[in-house]
Amino acid sequence: MYVLAGLCLSSLDATAKYLVRDHSLLVIVWARYAGQMVMVTPFAWHRAGGGFWRTRNLGTQLLRSLFLLCATLGFWGGLRYLPLAEASSITFLAPIIVVALSWPILGERATRARRIASIAGFVGILVLLRPGSAVMHPAIVLLLAAAFSNALYQLLTRRLPGDSMHTTLFYSASVGTVVLSVALPWGIGDEHVGAHAIAALLLLGVLAGAGHWLMTRAYLQAPASLLSPFTYLQILWATAFGFLFFSQHPDAISAVGMAIVIASGVLLAAWEHLRRHAY
Image 1: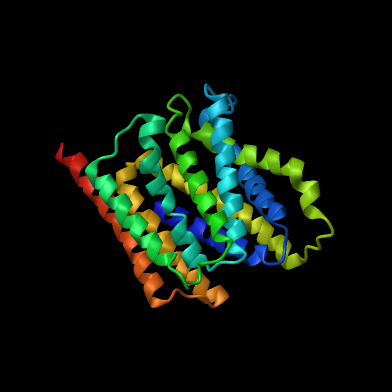
Image 2: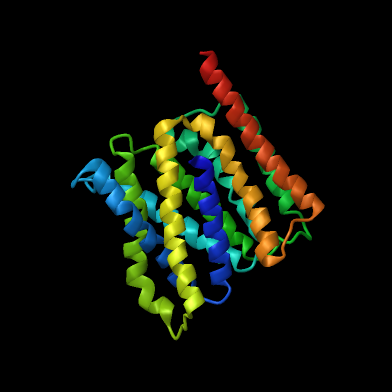
Protein backbone atom coordinates (compact mmCIF):
# COMPACT_ATOMS: atom_id res chain seq x y z
CA MET A 1 0.00 0.00 0.00
CA TYR A 2 2.83 2.39 0.81
CA VAL A 3 4.55 1.74 -2.52
CA LEU A 4 1.27 2.32 -4.36
CA ALA A 5 0.77 5.53 -2.34
CA GLY A 6 4.16 6.80 -3.51
CA LEU A 7 3.31 5.91 -7.11
CA CYS A 8 0.03 7.83 -6.85
CA LEU A 9 1.79 10.90 -5.43
CA SER A 10 4.51 10.79 -8.09
CA SER A 11 1.81 10.50 -10.75
CA LEU A 12 0.09 13.45 -9.08
CA ASP A 13 3.21 15.59 -9.48
CA ALA A 14 3.66 14.53 -13.11
CA THR A 15 0.03 15.43 -13.86
CA ALA A 16 0.50 18.79 -12.15
CA LYS A 17 3.60 19.50 -14.24
CA TYR A 18 1.61 18.74 -17.40
CA LEU A 19 -1.14 21.16 -16.33
CA VAL A 20 0.90 23.97 -14.81
CA ARG A 21 2.64 24.76 -18.10
CA ASP A 22 -0.56 26.19 -19.59
CA HIS A 23 -3.02 26.72 -16.75
CA SER A 24 -3.42 28.75 -13.56
CA LEU A 25 -1.52 27.37 -10.57
CA LEU A 26 -4.40 28.28 -8.22
CA VAL A 27 -6.92 26.31 -10.29
CA ILE A 28 -4.66 23.24 -10.39
CA VAL A 29 -3.90 23.23 -6.66
CA TRP A 30 -7.58 23.86 -5.86
CA ALA A 31 -8.57 20.82 -7.94
CA ARG A 32 -6.02 18.72 -6.05
CA TYR A 33 -7.33 19.67 -2.58
CA ALA A 34 -11.01 19.68 -3.48
CA GLY A 35 -10.72 16.25 -5.05
CA GLN A 36 -8.84 14.92 -2.05
CA MET A 37 -11.46 16.30 0.33
CA VAL A 38 -14.26 14.61 -1.63
CA MET A 39 -12.42 11.30 -1.40
CA VAL A 40 -11.17 11.35 2.21
CA THR A 41 -14.25 12.79 3.96
CA PRO A 42 -16.41 9.64 3.58
CA PHE A 43 -13.41 7.55 4.66
CA ALA A 44 -12.89 9.66 7.78
CA TRP A 45 -16.64 9.62 8.56
CA HIS A 46 -16.77 5.84 8.22
CA ARG A 47 -13.71 5.27 10.42
CA ALA A 48 -14.18 7.95 13.10
CA GLY A 49 -17.95 8.57 13.08
CA GLY A 50 -19.91 11.79 12.64
CA GLY A 51 -17.59 13.74 14.92
CA PHE A 52 -14.52 13.01 12.80
CA TRP A 53 -13.94 16.75 12.31
CA ARG A 54 -13.64 17.54 16.04
CA THR A 55 -10.11 18.25 17.18
CA ARG A 56 -8.35 19.10 20.42
CA ASN A 57 -5.71 21.04 18.55
CA LEU A 58 -7.58 23.31 16.14
CA GLY A 59 -4.84 25.95 15.88
CA THR A 60 -2.15 23.35 15.19
CA GLN A 61 -4.34 21.55 12.67
CA LEU A 62 -5.03 24.77 10.77
CA LEU A 63 -1.40 25.93 10.80
CA ARG A 64 -0.13 22.49 9.80
CA SER A 65 -2.57 22.31 6.88
CA LEU A 66 -1.58 25.81 5.75
CA PHE A 67 2.07 24.73 5.64
CA LEU A 68 1.05 21.75 3.51
CA LEU A 69 -0.78 24.11 1.15
CA CYS A 70 2.29 26.36 0.92
CA ALA A 71 4.45 23.33 0.17
CA THR A 72 2.16 22.30 -2.68
CA LEU A 73 2.00 25.81 -4.15
CA GLY A 74 5.78 26.19 -3.97
CA PHE A 75 6.58 22.78 -5.43
CA TRP A 76 4.09 22.88 -8.29
CA GLY A 77 4.98 26.49 -9.03
CA GLY A 78 8.61 25.42 -9.38
CA LEU A 79 7.63 22.50 -11.62
CA ARG A 80 6.58 24.98 -14.29
CA TYR A 81 10.27 25.79 -14.86
CA LEU A 82 12.32 22.87 -13.53
CA PRO A 83 12.76 19.17 -14.41
CA LEU A 84 10.54 16.79 -12.48
CA ALA A 85 13.25 14.46 -11.14
CA GLU A 86 15.59 17.18 -9.86
CA ALA A 87 12.71 19.17 -8.39
CA SER A 88 11.41 16.10 -6.54
CA SER A 89 14.88 15.41 -5.15
CA ILE A 90 15.23 18.93 -3.77
CA THR A 91 12.03 18.53 -1.76
CA PHE A 92 13.88 15.85 0.21
CA LEU A 93 15.59 18.73 1.96
CA ALA A 94 12.55 18.55 4.23
CA PRO A 95 13.85 15.64 6.38
CA ILE A 96 17.14 17.51 6.80
CA ILE A 97 15.29 20.61 7.98
CA VAL A 98 13.22 18.45 10.34
CA VAL A 99 16.42 17.22 12.01
CA ALA A 100 17.69 20.81 12.32
CA LEU A 101 14.44 22.11 13.85
CA SER A 102 13.44 19.13 15.98
CA TRP A 103 15.28 20.49 19.03
CA PRO A 104 13.98 24.11 19.02
CA ILE A 105 10.40 23.10 18.11
CA LEU A 106 9.91 19.66 19.68
CA GLY A 107 12.72 19.55 22.22
CA GLU A 108 14.07 16.37 20.60
CA ARG A 109 17.81 15.91 20.17
CA ALA A 110 18.79 14.26 16.89
CA THR A 111 20.89 11.11 17.15
CA ARG A 112 24.36 11.00 15.66
CA ALA A 113 23.11 8.77 12.84
CA ARG A 114 20.40 11.29 11.93
CA ARG A 115 22.91 14.14 11.92
CA ILE A 116 25.28 12.17 9.67
CA ALA A 117 22.46 11.20 7.30
CA SER A 118 21.27 14.82 7.17
CA ILE A 119 24.74 16.09 6.31
CA ALA A 120 25.08 13.43 3.59
CA GLY A 121 21.69 14.33 2.16
CA PHE A 122 22.61 18.01 2.19
CA VAL A 123 25.79 17.20 0.25
CA GLY A 124 23.63 15.42 -2.33
CA ILE A 125 21.41 18.50 -2.65
CA LEU A 126 24.50 20.70 -3.11
CA VAL A 127 25.62 18.44 -5.97
CA LEU A 128 22.20 18.95 -7.57
CA LEU A 129 22.40 22.72 -7.07
CA ARG A 130 25.89 23.12 -8.48
CA PRO A 131 26.50 26.04 -10.86
CA GLY A 132 25.49 25.16 -14.41
CA SER A 133 23.00 22.46 -13.47
CA ALA A 134 19.47 22.37 -14.87
CA VAL A 135 18.15 23.27 -11.44
CA MET A 136 19.94 26.61 -11.20
CA HIS A 137 16.91 28.76 -11.99
CA PRO A 138 15.19 31.50 -9.95
CA ALA A 139 12.31 29.06 -9.42
CA ILE A 140 14.60 27.13 -7.06
CA VAL A 141 13.44 29.61 -4.40
CA LEU A 142 9.94 28.13 -4.69
CA LEU A 143 11.28 24.60 -4.20
CA LEU A 144 13.32 25.62 -1.16
CA ALA A 145 10.26 27.33 0.32
CA ALA A 146 8.26 24.16 -0.40
CA ALA A 147 10.85 22.00 1.39
CA PHE A 148 10.85 24.34 4.41
CA SER A 149 7.03 24.39 4.53
CA ASN A 150 6.93 20.61 4.23
CA ALA A 151 9.37 20.27 7.15
CA LEU A 152 7.20 22.50 9.36
CA TYR A 153 4.15 20.48 8.26
CA GLN A 154 5.89 17.27 9.37
CA LEU A 155 7.00 18.76 12.69
CA LEU A 156 3.51 20.03 13.51
CA THR A 157 2.06 16.63 12.62
CA ARG A 158 4.05 15.22 15.54
CA ARG A 159 2.34 17.69 17.87
CA LEU A 160 -1.10 16.15 17.28
CA PRO A 161 -1.09 13.14 19.61
CA GLY A 162 -4.68 13.72 20.71
CA ASP A 163 -6.24 13.61 17.22
CA SER A 164 -6.95 10.54 15.14
CA MET A 165 -5.26 10.06 11.81
CA HIS A 166 -8.65 10.38 10.12
CA THR A 167 -9.28 13.81 11.62
CA THR A 168 -5.83 14.97 10.57
CA LEU A 169 -6.34 13.62 7.05
CA PHE A 170 -9.61 15.56 6.79
CA TYR A 171 -8.04 18.87 7.85
CA SER A 172 -5.13 18.35 5.45
CA ALA A 173 -7.60 18.41 2.55
CA SER A 174 -10.31 20.77 3.78
CA VAL A 175 -8.15 23.75 4.81
CA GLY A 176 -6.50 23.92 1.39
CA THR A 177 -9.89 23.59 -0.29
CA VAL A 178 -11.47 26.44 1.70
CA VAL A 179 -8.51 28.82 1.33
CA LEU A 180 -8.18 28.23 -2.40
CA SER A 181 -11.94 28.44 -2.98
CA VAL A 182 -11.82 31.99 -1.60
CA ALA A 183 -8.85 32.87 -3.83
CA LEU A 184 -10.12 31.03 -6.91
CA PRO A 185 -11.92 33.99 -8.57
CA TRP A 186 -8.56 35.79 -8.84
CA GLY A 187 -6.91 32.70 -10.31
CA ILE A 188 -9.40 31.87 -13.04
CA GLY A 189 -9.29 35.08 -15.08
CA ASP A 190 -9.97 34.37 -18.76
CA GLU A 191 -8.70 30.81 -18.46
CA HIS A 192 -9.95 28.33 -21.06
CA VAL A 193 -10.00 24.73 -19.87
CA GLY A 194 -10.45 22.06 -22.54
CA ALA A 195 -11.67 18.50 -22.17
CA HIS A 196 -8.18 17.07 -21.71
CA ALA A 197 -7.39 19.60 -18.98
CA ILE A 198 -10.69 18.88 -17.19
CA ALA A 199 -9.88 15.16 -17.21
CA ALA A 200 -6.40 15.89 -15.83
CA LEU A 201 -7.85 18.14 -13.10
CA LEU A 202 -10.23 15.38 -12.04
CA LEU A 203 -7.30 12.96 -12.04
CA LEU A 204 -5.46 15.23 -9.58
CA GLY A 205 -8.15 14.74 -6.96
CA VAL A 206 -8.31 10.98 -7.51
CA LEU A 207 -4.54 10.57 -7.25
CA ALA A 208 -4.26 12.83 -4.18
CA GLY A 209 -7.12 11.11 -2.38
CA ALA A 210 -5.94 7.60 -3.25
CA GLY A 211 -2.33 8.38 -2.38
CA HIS A 212 -3.11 9.80 1.06
CA TRP A 213 -5.66 7.08 1.80
CA LEU A 214 -3.16 4.32 0.95
CA MET A 215 -0.43 6.03 2.96
CA THR A 216 -2.72 6.37 5.98
CA ARG A 217 -3.71 2.71 5.76
CA ALA A 218 -0.07 1.68 5.48
CA TYR A 219 0.93 3.67 8.57
CA LEU A 220 -1.90 2.03 10.51
CA GLN A 221 -0.43 -1.41 9.81
CA ALA A 222 3.36 -0.94 9.86
CA PRO A 223 5.93 1.21 11.71
CA ALA A 224 7.26 4.33 10.02
CA SER A 225 10.86 3.06 10.24
CA LEU A 226 9.89 0.10 8.05
CA LEU A 227 8.05 2.20 5.47
CA SER A 228 10.23 5.29 5.15
CA PRO A 229 12.93 3.79 2.84
CA PHE A 230 10.26 3.27 0.20
CA THR A 231 9.60 7.03 0.15
CA TYR A 232 12.72 7.45 -1.96
CA LEU A 233 11.20 5.38 -4.74
CA GLN A 234 9.38 8.60 -5.63
CA ILE A 235 12.64 10.03 -6.97
CA LEU A 236 13.00 7.05 -9.30
CA TRP A 237 9.40 7.33 -10.46
CA ALA A 238 9.81 11.08 -10.98
CA THR A 239 12.86 10.36 -13.14
CA ALA A 240 10.89 7.84 -15.20
CA PHE A 241 7.90 10.18 -15.63
CA GLY A 242 10.19 13.07 -16.56
CA PHE A 243 11.81 10.98 -19.27
CA LEU A 244 8.62 9.41 -20.63
CA PHE A 245 6.35 12.46 -20.68
CA PHE A 246 8.65 15.49 -20.76
CA SER A 247 11.84 14.16 -22.41
CA GLN A 248 13.84 15.24 -19.35
CA HIS A 249 16.52 13.22 -17.63
CA PRO A 250 19.22 14.17 -15.12
CA ASP A 251 22.81 14.37 -16.28
CA ALA A 252 25.47 12.13 -14.73
CA ILE A 253 26.48 14.52 -11.93
CA SER A 254 22.85 15.25 -11.00
CA ALA A 255 22.22 11.49 -10.89
CA VAL A 256 25.09 11.16 -8.40
CA GLY A 257 23.52 13.86 -6.22
CA MET A 258 20.16 12.12 -6.32
CA ALA A 259 21.80 8.79 -5.44
CA ILE A 260 23.45 10.41 -2.39
CA VAL A 261 20.10 11.75 -1.22
CA ILE A 262 18.44 8.35 -1.64
CA ALA A 263 21.29 6.45 0.03
CA SER A 264 21.38 8.77 3.06
CA GLY A 265 17.66 8.31 3.70
CA VAL A 266 17.51 4.57 3.07
CA LEU A 267 20.55 3.79 5.22
CA LEU A 268 19.26 5.92 8.09
CA ALA A 269 15.84 4.25 7.99
CA ALA A 270 17.45 0.79 7.88
CA TRP A 271 19.73 1.64 10.82
CA GLU A 272 16.83 2.92 12.95
CA HIS A 273 14.74 -0.14 12.11
CA LEU A 274 17.56 -2.45 13.20
CA ARG A 275 18.21 -0.43 16.36
CA ARG A 276 14.52 -0.56 17.34
CA HIS A 277 14.46 -4.35 16.99
CA ALA A 278 17.73 -4.69 18.89
CA TYR A 279 16.08 -3.16 21.97
